[in-house]
Image 1 (cartoon, rainbow, N blue to C red):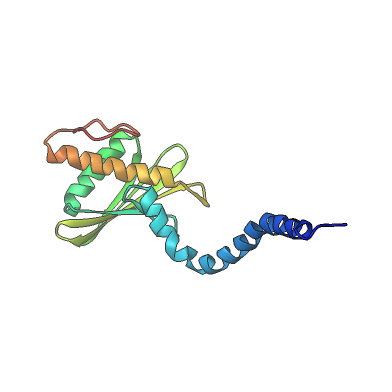
Image 2 (cartoon, rainbow, N blue to C red):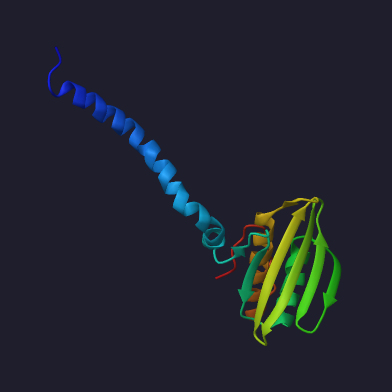
Length: 165
């Protein structure tokens, strides 16, 4: 014969084993509709201020005039051995196309105000794939070049390097 507490113990063990599974399905339902809105915020936090959109384009707004950002972009491209194929200027926008062995890189500089520029980098690898890390690194190297210009030095940008202090 079983005691009073023996059957209850089995149910408690079964409930404890399946409880996390039950919660897992319930927790995912309210979060799923928020994922498209939350993803850029999560990626922005992971990229140190560089945002990555759902269209796979990295971007950052820089507090410098578009002319200075363009100069820094070309300097960073040169230092990273990117071959600049095309540079088109319009009134409030500059588009630069560069290539590597495996990437085609589209850089767009957009004047937001006389002293504020938005930098967008789309690093494509082939027809479909995009390379977020390469796009982030290009923006980082542009910022390093800008810091060097502000200090009156030409900083030797290296992949993964930090700006001089």
